[in-house]
Image (cartoon, rainbow, N blue to C red; front, top):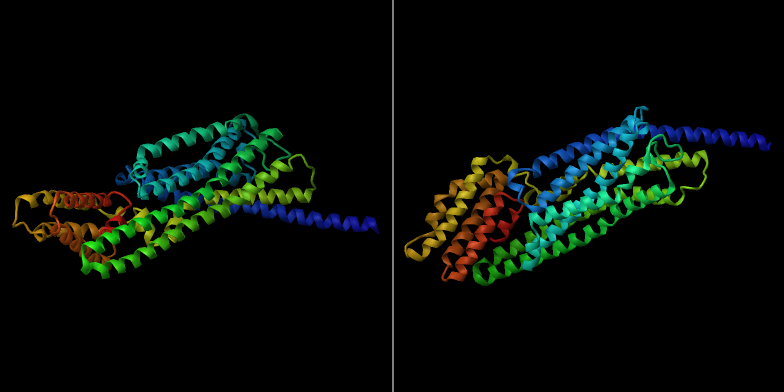
Length: 436
């Protein structure tokens, strides 16, 4: 009787093992292809948008650009071998050079991509700070510096992979893996720490950025209320609009952190589990379950490498399109962008003429460039909002130009217009609306 029960149990386990192995095989074959296409398209779109000439001088955009590049490298270097392994054609499983190269590139690229996103959030926080010294730290030079340093550090941390990884491994999650327990432990723990640590830091700097933006806008609204009494209603409505935008920004950041956390955590747990139970014998059923979880967690993490574009597009809403994303500018022609630069330069030059002409009227200056400004706004905003934006510009310029009585006020207006002037070439067009 005991022998019969043992036979039935063994048969049930064999069927379950076969089912799990089949699920793992189908997952590797087809889910990998979906992630490869999904992630590649998203990162390519990010690169095409963020590599525009007008964004090359913006530190935050550059960080997001290279994060997308590194994500794309991680997907290209990691997923094809997994797809081919589903049909038994993975070269990294048998070729020593391919095995070492893939292990080194994938383990280095994926943490670096997450850290680049963290640095971009830190850059946002610095740029939104009310302290001048912090704002000055937000620069393209510093962005390039932290990217290079982090890449060098990651390269050094995972340099042992070149020595440790070998093909044709048997008792390992995949054919190309570490040859010793020490190598596997160092690789797994390093990857886990470098992947999980940035997530709470992203949340912290994201919340501090939102706080800085709210404080800055409150100061702007308070200043405008004191200067012009009849603008109190406008400022009240503006504050409501800004509060909604702050809420949207908070949602975007929280969704980004939440999705990255959900997609990265399973692999981190798997790495920790693998490091702990490496030398522990297990049954065939347990091995099949471990193999399924390993492949699933790996694919989830690869999915996070291709999610950035879709997170910003779907969760960011208008905040992403107007403040963080240059997608509206991509439809603008170079000629219209030049018109946009020209009119704000004309406004700035016109401010200096006010001292020498008591009969100079601001409306003349505004009317001279009305067509150019409307064309530029038409590229960025929807048609039903273009009129509102133009009205804001007229109110702002009429108010400011008529209030110039001394040099300090004039320099303040010039500073504001300089902020407006950069809006056509960066993702800070929303900053222009803060001045109205």
